[in-house]
Image (cartoon, rainbow, N blue to C red; front, side, top):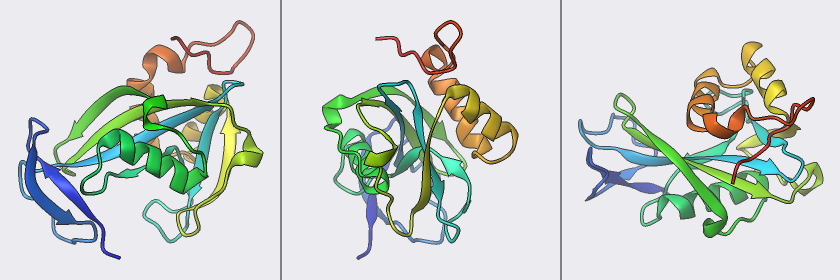
Length: 182
């Protein structure tokens, strides 16, 4: 089934235009579509990452959950859907904390960033066939090391460090697990 997403103007106001997901041409200048990124952290302060299917763009790289917001969806609803589709974790959109956004002019994307704090373990993860092939729970230090070794998507890691800076590097003394500020 064909997927569409809504287009927005530079001020993030809906234009009423729809765009076919698999459209090969670039978005019109000044038009953007919404993309969500979800940093999922469990009760132990570990970050959930997934490995992209080898047949997808950036195949084999590790990343956090995310994807395009579908036509008619609000970004928070799209974030909850993407988290569930890619990992099997169910989150009410109200459980997702908005952390910020980045507008990328060249790609025509507005990236919305959310934080999901959940009570989950590795055994709770159900991978989406054709999208993800593996998952891990890692500390922020391990994630940084993976980025340094070019295993985790570099541009994604840089965005994480920027958007989640106030929580990403806070650690308990002597520990390398994430400590979240409320």
